[in-house]
Amino acid sequence: MADIDNDIKQMIISELELEDVEVEDIDTQAPLFGEGLGLDSIDALELGLALQKRFNVKIDANSDQNKEHFRSVASLREFVLAQTAS
Image 1 (cartoon, rainbow, N blue to C red):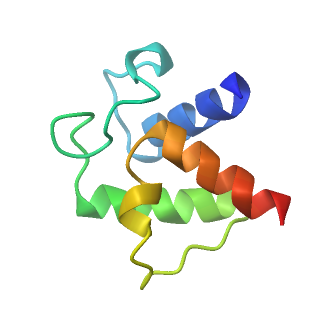
Image 2: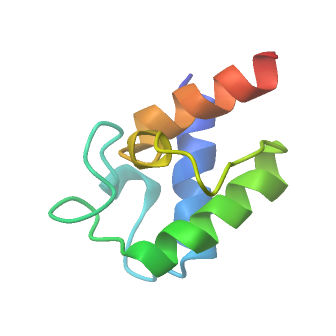
């Protein structure tokens, strides 16, 4: 599980060009938005596209669950694992 967490963290850093952030700086359970990593809605769109490319998952733009999926690295991991298992 640590491998996929680190893959997601590295993807966040590289796709969003977070220059002063290292993989170790991102807490797997911490919020990605608001007081956590501080991402915004534009970051969410870029992150969604990167997830689709990297992990070949489908994200429904109209889903009410997206907010929960994008809550943290841990919730993104669970979303990716659920999508790739089916």
